[in-house]
Amino acid sequence: MQITKTLFISIITATVLMLQGCLITPSSVVKKESFDGKKQYALFTIMAPETISNKSGSRNSSLAGLFKSATADSGFSEDSNDIFKKTYPKAVKLLSKNPRFKLVSGKKLHRNKAYKKLKSDEPPSFLSFSYHLAKGYKYFDGEKKYAEAIKSMGVDGAISVVINYSYGTAGFNLGFIEAGKQRAYVMINVTAFDRNGKTIWRDTVEQESKDYIGVIASSANFKELEPLLIEAAESGMVKVMDNFEKKMKGDA
Image (cartoon, rainbow, N blue to C red; front, side, top):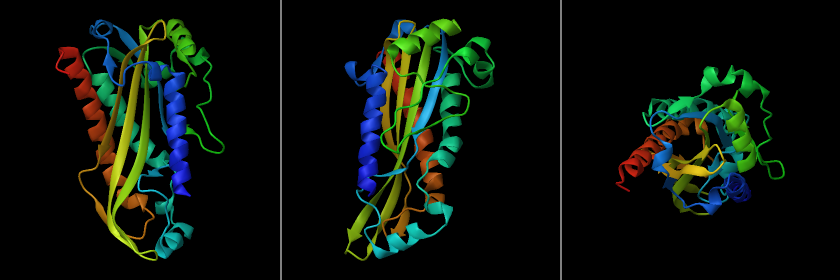
C-alpha cells in the first residue's frame, strides 16, 4: 500500500536529518557569519527518495487505479529517478549563483583529487526502500564524517540537498470510482555544515504546483504530472534561496 511507502519516506527522511545533526537545531537556521561571499562550500550530497509518494493516502483504491498500475506503461512507474535527473540541476544552478558563498559542484568537484579519494557511505534505507543519489555526488552518515570530508577537501563547509517528490488528489471516492484534481508536491531539505560538521544553514520548504490535472482513479500518470513536478521543484528551490536571503538580511 502507498501509505506504507509514504511512512517509509517520512521515517527515512527523519533518519537522514538526524544523522546529519539537523534534528537538534531549529527547523530553519542561518548563521550569517558563515556566509561572507568568500567562503567555499562543496555540494557533497544531492539525493531523493526513490519513490514518488502519495500524500492522499493509499493508492489504487478504485478499480481503474488498479488496472492502470498493472499496465507496463512507464508513465505509472513511481520511481523518482527520471524526474530527479530533470529537476536537481536547477537546485544546483540556484545554489551556484548565490553571491553569499562560492559553490564547488559538478565537474569541478568530481574531478578534484581529494574528493575522488573520499569514500561515500550508502544513503539510509528501510527494508527495500532507499534513495537515488545524483551521479558523482556522495553521502556521509553523520556530522563527524562530513567534517572529515570538508577538511580533506580543504573547503570551508559542505551542503546537502534532499528532494522529496509526491502528489495529492482532492475530489471524491465512491469505492469503485475516484475522481478529482491531482497536484504535484515537492519538499526540499537544504543543510550546510562548517568545518566542524556543525549545522550553519538549514531550511525545509514544501511547494505545491500551481496547476493541476484532472483524474479519474487514484493512480498517477507521472508523464502527465512531470511538468507540475518540475514547476514545484523549481519554485521550491527559489523559495529556499529567498528564505536564505531574508535570513541574511535579518528580515526573517
